[in-house]
Figure 1 (cartoon, one colour):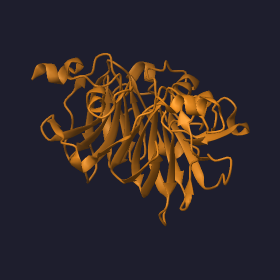
Figure 2 (cartoon, one colour; figure 1 turned 120 degrees about the horizontal axis):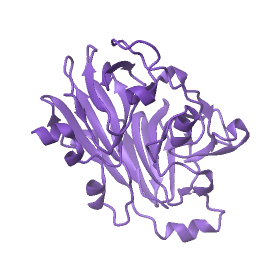
Figure 3 (cartoon, one colour; figure 1 turned 90 degrees about the vertical axis):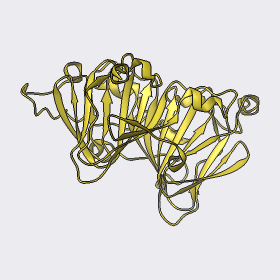
Figure 4 (cartoon, one colour; figure 1 turned 180 degrees about the horizontal axis):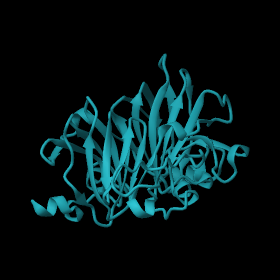
Length: 318
């Protein structure tokens, strides 16, 4: 979306803030192991890692007015590689904050789709020449090669989670002055907005609700030229509830905690997390999530490749 700092060149290079900015340094946050097997819980042993919110660095995202848009890169293949892990995802995720009365420049992402989930404030988006307003609790899917800009006309900060698939590449951020812009926009599509309250949740593991927001089947209804390699779901686990132990074969999961706190047991290791943290669960790991807080535990679950019930051991048992 706007110009951001590449992870490789740090603050020297400013690019425009794209959904999955390549750039912030993240803290892998040692997984807290409270089980019988003490010591540092490495992801290669536990099958998961918790990235703590406190360890993510906020950086300016705009070339112009750099203090008015900030980006916090949460997770990406390059971050995982830097932590000595094998990247089992092909997307990036970032926190974006836009101050009042500011906007991202008009641009498009070449051969890259973007999903924007608004967590606070209201986003006024001009996408493919059409105005779209998205409030908190709305996910907007922007197809590849689609011109767009996002503006905050409110009195408080606009905050959203941005996911790009494939991962953001500065070379694929194209602006109107580039000769490729008009050629690429011919292949663009209109955006799709999905409101959480309008998505019918399915019930998993007793009272755990999972609302599928984005997957190939959903997008096929809206976009002819859609292309997404990951799925996004909105998961709610009530106080005192948990998911049954299960394995999702061949699918890596990234959970972005929006509300509450909990514990995840992965391959017999226990890791705690709280609001703002990110949980990375490797493909094939044996997992279970418990709500240990006093309110609903809510998180976005991003799966790569998209979640398929036939690959979930808990579904196979039913």
